[in-house]
Length: 119
Image 1 (tube, rainbow, N blue to C red):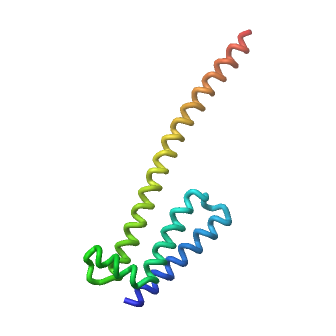
Image 2 (tube, helix red, strand yellow):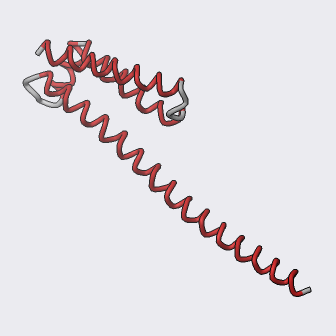
Image 3 (cartoon, one colour):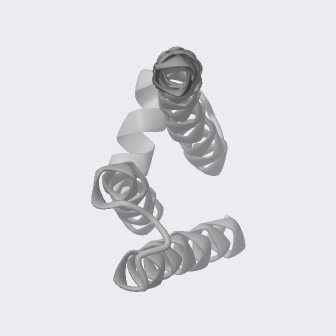
């Protein structure tokens, strides 16, 4: 049990460090890094607090507390991945709309150039 908690603590700390380094180097935007920082801190808190871990496992009726930690970690990452899927979908829709607007502007520009050449 202790080994799993130590591994989860190390992974949480590593995730937090990677997010902060990426944020500092401008590889990730602030609004996207908040989710990862909150997830890393939550997993770090749960993996280092036996009372909190026992409370969660009792609430979920899980007899082995580290399994509750893995379940919580999976749930946290599932929520984050869903959030980013929504963001990516919106960006794709925005890109399509932008490409359509650029095509319309190019058409109008070609029409204006053609009319200017005729004059």
